[in-house]
Amino acid sequence: MRFQTALQPARLIRRYKRFLADIRLEDGREVTAHCANPGSMMGLAEEGTKIWVEPNDDPKKKLKFGWRLVDHGNGHFTGVDTSVPNRALKASLVAGEVPGLQAPMVRPEVKYGDNSRIDFLLSGDGPDTYVEVKSVTLCREAGLAEFPDSRTARGLKHLQELSVVAQNGARAVMLYLVQRTDSDRVSIAGDIDPAYAEGLIAARQAGVEVMAFDCRITPEEITLGKALPFVG
View 1: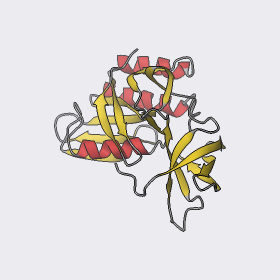
View 2: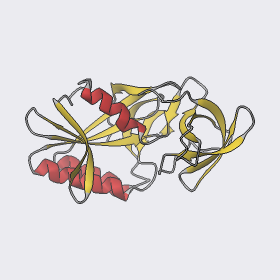
View 3: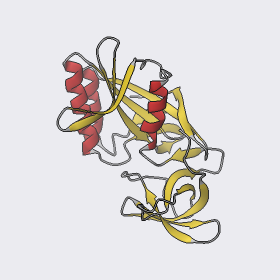
View 4: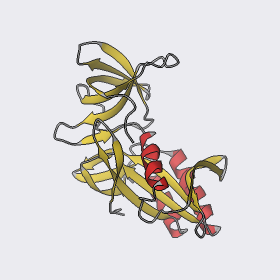
């Protein structure tokens, strides 16, 4: 998935109200950018952090910049926009490039469960496959990406609904997409959200599969990378 507009480097001043960030552009202007991430963004939102933002000239949008990346300064990036993983994954699913998730028909945002929408429903070969996707950006130990970075009742609800899907005979997949280029394995941050950690154990016992992939990230594009081992 290529960014629609060329990203611009900036420095973070502060992130607040979850979806807002004051930033300083290279030309010295201080503006407010949209932050499309409802999580805590632990370790990613310190003052002075180098970031990359996407400008827009849409008259319907009040904020003219969107925060897309954190630049760790060592050739590594983290994608902070939680809408990006689904867009990047969709292209790979449609192209049949995701190991273990090939199907003739790929439908996003299909209603299921208790007033929910599954990220992707794959059909056409055997039982339907329900794929729920979570963006992973937390890293507290070198090389280890963790989910979630804050308590997520919504995430737990999705696990419970995937469990019902599996018990009813369809295939259910919980896919963790790591938006970091510095991680080589994935785990659950049980100390941050014990209920989610317990929910995942129960979901796997009910037949829900767990997959994890990383991303290739540059200021030009984000694309699906390789499969990662899930630890836990």
